[in-house]
Image 1 (cartoon, rainbow, N blue to C red):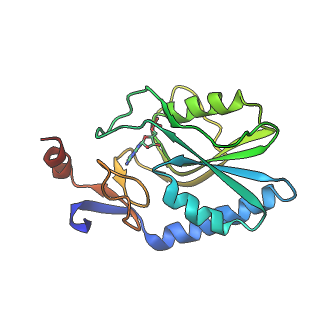
Image 2: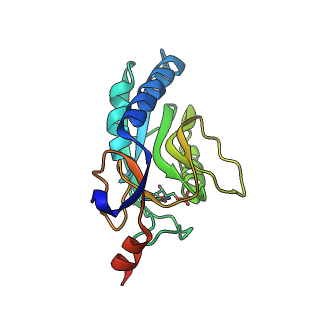
Length: 182
Ligand code: 5GP
Protein backbone atom coordinates (compact mmCIF):
# COMPACT_ATOMS: atom_id res chain seq x y z
CA UNK A 1 0.00 0.00 0.00
CA UNK A 2 2.74 2.47 0.98
CA UNK A 3 4.31 2.02 -2.44
CA UNK A 4 1.15 3.48 -4.07
CA UNK A 5 1.67 6.76 -2.21
CA UNK A 6 3.50 9.61 -3.96
CA UNK A 7 3.79 11.89 -0.96
CA UNK A 8 2.79 11.95 2.70
CA UNK A 9 0.89 15.18 3.39
CA UNK A 10 0.12 14.76 7.09
CA UNK A 11 1.98 12.15 9.13
CA UNK A 12 0.88 10.14 12.16
CA UNK A 13 2.49 12.46 14.73
CA UNK A 14 1.01 15.60 13.18
CA UNK A 15 -2.45 14.01 13.19
CA UNK A 16 -2.15 12.87 16.82
CA UNK A 17 -1.04 16.32 17.97
CA UNK A 18 -3.78 18.15 16.11
CA UNK A 19 -6.54 15.75 17.18
CA UNK A 20 -5.51 16.25 20.81
CA UNK A 21 -5.70 20.04 20.37
CA UNK A 22 -9.12 19.80 18.71
CA UNK A 23 -10.38 17.57 21.53
CA UNK A 24 -9.23 20.10 24.12
CA UNK A 25 -10.81 23.00 22.24
CA UNK A 26 -14.12 21.17 21.80
CA UNK A 27 -14.13 20.13 25.49
CA UNK A 28 -13.67 23.76 26.52
CA UNK A 29 -16.27 25.14 24.10
CA UNK A 30 -18.96 22.61 24.99
CA UNK A 31 -18.33 22.39 28.75
CA UNK A 32 -21.65 21.97 30.57
CA UNK A 33 -23.57 21.25 27.36
CA UNK A 34 -24.52 17.72 26.30
CA UNK A 35 -22.76 17.20 22.99
CA UNK A 36 -23.72 14.84 20.14
CA UNK A 37 -20.96 13.94 17.70
CA UNK A 38 -22.35 12.95 14.31
CA UNK A 39 -19.83 10.89 12.34
CA UNK A 40 -20.21 10.85 8.58
CA UNK A 41 -19.51 7.32 7.40
CA UNK A 42 -17.31 5.89 6.21
CA UNK A 43 -14.39 8.25 5.71
CA UNK A 44 -14.63 10.02 9.08
CA UNK A 45 -14.64 6.86 11.19
CA UNK A 46 -10.92 6.86 12.04
CA UNK A 47 -10.89 10.58 12.85
CA UNK A 48 -14.06 10.15 14.94
CA UNK A 49 -12.55 7.32 16.99
CA UNK A 50 -9.48 9.39 17.86
CA UNK A 51 -11.32 12.70 18.36
CA UNK A 52 -13.88 11.07 20.64
CA UNK A 53 -11.11 9.90 22.97
CA UNK A 54 -9.51 13.35 22.98
CA UNK A 55 -12.76 14.90 24.27
CA UNK A 56 -12.96 15.02 28.05
CA UNK A 57 -16.61 16.07 28.56
CA UNK A 58 -19.69 13.78 28.36
CA UNK A 59 -20.57 13.07 24.75
CA UNK A 60 -22.90 10.81 22.78
CA UNK A 61 -22.32 9.60 19.23
CA UNK A 62 -24.44 8.88 16.18
CA UNK A 63 -23.69 7.96 12.59
CA UNK A 64 -24.92 8.93 9.19
CA UNK A 65 -23.89 7.43 5.84
CA UNK A 66 -24.22 9.38 2.64
CA UNK A 67 -23.31 8.59 -0.94
CA UNK A 68 -19.83 9.74 -1.94
CA UNK A 69 -17.67 9.49 -5.02
CA UNK A 70 -17.97 5.74 -5.52
CA UNK A 71 -14.87 4.79 -7.46
CA UNK A 72 -14.49 8.26 -8.90
CA UNK A 73 -12.27 11.09 -7.70
CA UNK A 74 -14.74 13.95 -8.21
CA UNK A 75 -17.96 14.74 -6.39
CA UNK A 76 -21.10 14.12 -8.42
CA UNK A 77 -23.03 16.76 -6.53
CA UNK A 78 -25.76 14.24 -5.88
CA UNK A 79 -25.98 13.41 -2.20
CA UNK A 80 -28.12 10.56 -0.92
CA UNK A 81 -28.66 9.39 2.66
CA UNK A 82 -27.72 5.71 2.84
CA UNK A 83 -28.10 5.48 6.63
CA UNK A 84 -29.82 8.08 8.76
CA UNK A 85 -29.14 9.01 12.39
CA UNK A 86 -30.60 6.61 14.96
CA UNK A 87 -31.59 9.34 17.41
CA UNK A 88 -33.35 12.69 17.33
CA UNK A 89 -31.11 15.78 17.46
CA UNK A 90 -33.91 18.23 18.26
CA UNK A 91 -32.77 20.70 20.93
CA UNK A 92 -29.28 19.17 21.11
CA UNK A 93 -25.80 20.59 20.53
CA UNK A 94 -24.57 18.78 17.45
CA UNK A 95 -21.07 18.62 16.01
CA UNK A 96 -20.70 17.04 12.57
CA UNK A 97 -17.43 15.10 12.25
CA UNK A 98 -16.35 14.96 8.61
CA UNK A 99 -13.20 13.64 6.95
CA UNK A 100 -12.63 16.13 4.15
CA UNK A 101 -14.26 19.04 2.39
CA UNK A 102 -13.64 19.49 -1.31
CA UNK A 103 -16.39 21.28 -3.29
CA UNK A 104 -18.45 21.60 -0.10
CA UNK A 105 -21.53 20.11 -1.77
CA UNK A 106 -21.79 17.24 0.68
CA UNK A 107 -21.49 19.49 3.70
CA UNK A 108 -23.94 22.08 2.37
CA UNK A 109 -26.50 19.32 1.92
CA UNK A 110 -25.83 17.88 5.37
CA UNK A 111 -26.11 21.24 7.10
CA UNK A 112 -29.43 21.97 5.44
CA UNK A 113 -30.77 18.53 6.22
CA UNK A 114 -29.70 18.51 9.88
CA UNK A 115 -30.72 22.14 10.48
CA UNK A 116 -34.29 21.25 9.53
CA UNK A 117 -34.33 18.86 12.53
CA UNK A 118 -34.02 21.85 14.89
CA UNK A 119 -30.87 21.14 16.91
CA UNK A 120 -29.96 23.71 19.58
CA UNK A 121 -26.68 24.29 17.72
CA UNK A 122 -25.01 22.76 14.67
CA UNK A 123 -21.28 23.03 14.00
CA UNK A 124 -18.70 21.24 11.85
CA UNK A 125 -15.37 19.66 12.69
CA UNK A 126 -13.42 18.59 9.62
CA UNK A 127 -10.04 16.89 9.50
CA UNK A 128 -9.00 18.16 6.08
CA UNK A 129 -10.08 21.31 4.28
CA UNK A 130 -8.99 21.47 0.64
CA UNK A 131 -7.91 24.83 -0.69
CA UNK A 132 -10.40 25.14 -3.54
CA UNK A 133 -12.63 28.01 -4.66
CA UNK A 134 -16.16 27.52 -3.32
CA UNK A 135 -19.39 29.18 -4.31
CA UNK A 136 -20.70 29.52 -0.78
CA UNK A 137 -18.67 29.96 2.37
CA UNK A 138 -19.14 27.06 4.75
CA UNK A 139 -19.42 27.53 8.51
CA UNK A 140 -16.59 25.26 9.62
CA UNK A 141 -15.92 25.71 13.34
CA UNK A 142 -12.95 23.32 13.69
CA UNK A 143 -10.40 22.40 11.02
CA UNK A 144 -7.59 19.87 11.42
CA UNK A 145 -5.45 20.78 8.42
CA UNK A 146 -5.76 22.85 5.28
CA UNK A 147 -4.37 20.90 2.33
CA UNK A 148 -3.73 21.59 -1.37
CA UNK A 149 -6.23 20.53 -4.02
CA UNK A 150 -5.12 16.91 -4.51
CA UNK A 151 -6.86 13.58 -4.11
CA UNK A 152 -5.75 12.09 -0.80
CA UNK A 153 -6.15 8.74 0.93
CA UNK A 154 -5.42 7.24 4.35
CA UNK A 155 -6.59 7.80 7.94
CA UNK A 156 -10.09 6.72 6.92
CA UNK A 157 -10.08 8.10 3.38
CA UNK A 158 -10.28 5.61 0.54
CA UNK A 159 -9.78 5.19 -3.13
CA UNK A 160 -12.12 2.45 -4.39
CA UNK A 161 -12.44 1.29 -0.74
CA UNK A 162 -8.66 0.84 -0.36
CA UNK A 163 -6.10 2.68 1.80
CA UNK A 164 -8.46 3.58 4.69
CA UNK A 165 -6.13 1.83 7.15
CA UNK A 166 -3.03 3.86 6.33
CA UNK A 167 -2.11 5.76 9.52
CA UNK A 168 -1.23 8.95 7.60
CA UNK A 169 -2.81 11.12 4.86
CA UNK A 170 -1.07 10.90 1.51
CA UNK A 171 -1.40 11.61 -2.19
CA UNK A 172 -1.76 8.61 -4.48
CA UNK A 173 0.53 8.08 -7.44
CA UNK A 174 -1.38 9.00 -10.62
CA UNK A 175 -0.73 5.60 -12.19
CA UNK A 176 -2.81 3.96 -9.42
CA UNK A 177 -6.00 5.62 -10.74
CA UNK A 178 -5.51 4.31 -14.23
CA UNK A 179 -4.89 0.80 -12.90
CA UNK A 180 -8.15 0.80 -10.93
CA UNK A 181 -10.21 2.45 -13.68
CA UNK A 182 -8.97 0.22 -16.49
P1 5GP B 1 -17.38 17.51 -1.50
O1 5GP B 1 -18.86 17.29 -1.53
O2 5GP B 1 -16.94 18.54 -0.49
O3 5GP B 1 -16.83 17.79 -2.89
O4 5GP B 1 -16.71 16.11 -1.12
C1 5GP B 1 -16.81 15.61 0.16
C2 5GP B 1 -16.70 14.10 0.21
O5 5GP B 1 -16.01 13.59 -0.94
C3 5GP B 1 -15.87 13.69 1.40
O6 5GP B 1 -16.69 13.40 2.52
C4 5GP B 1 -15.16 12.44 0.89
O7 5GP B 1 -15.96 11.31 1.08
C5 5GP B 1 -15.00 12.69 -0.58
N1 5GP B 1 -13.69 13.31 -0.93
C6 5GP B 1 -13.43 14.60 -1.26
N2 5GP B 1 -12.13 14.79 -1.51
C7 5GP B 1 -11.52 13.59 -1.32
C8 5GP B 1 -10.17 13.15 -1.40
O8 5GP B 1 -9.21 13.89 -1.70
N3 5GP B 1 -9.95 11.85 -1.11
C9 5GP B 1 -10.94 10.98 -0.77
N4 5GP B 1 -10.59 9.72 -0.51
N5 5GP B 1 -12.23 11.36 -0.68
C10 5GP B 1 -12.52 12.65 -0.94
